[in-house]
Amino acid sequence: MKTATNHYPQSHNFRYINGSSKVVFLTFIATLALIASAAIYGKKHIQAFLLTDTPQATEVNQAPKYLSLEKFVISVESDTVIYYMMIEMSLVTSSDKNLTDLNYYLPAIRNAVVKNLSQRDFDSMRVYLKDLTSLQTQLHADVKASLAQYDVAEAIDNVLITKLVIQ
Image 1 (cartoon, rainbow, N blue to C red):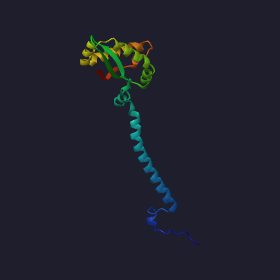
Image 2: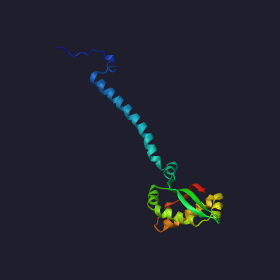
Image 3: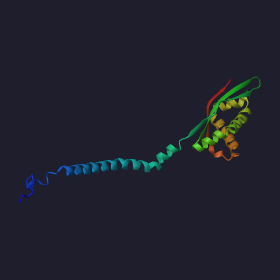
């Protein structure tokens, strides 16, 4: 009777892996390497996802939003001459919802600005040219009061004067 013989010496049985076992072994090693690299890559992204509530991320979400208003042209009287004032402004808000509200109430906002500026004469406007901050503060208060009747007064954070010319 013939017995099956091993082609490899007895001492080398563990060193050599036959064909199908070799494929399984290499697939197992490649899978482990893939899982390890995915775990390292995923850990970085999961940490980034979980850290979105950090103060730095909150600051980015609360970046101011601006609504530029079309320019206003207002007549400004003096004792001898009528001057014209051209003013451009932007409204500052903190959220997209507030920006939507401000866009919707734009006619009321423009009305409040025109009412405020049309009451000024040339001498008072010359004073404001030297102190734009107080004019901005007054415009902000008037716009906020106008928006209060619609329950959206908190939508506006500030008024910025971006251009002012009197001729």
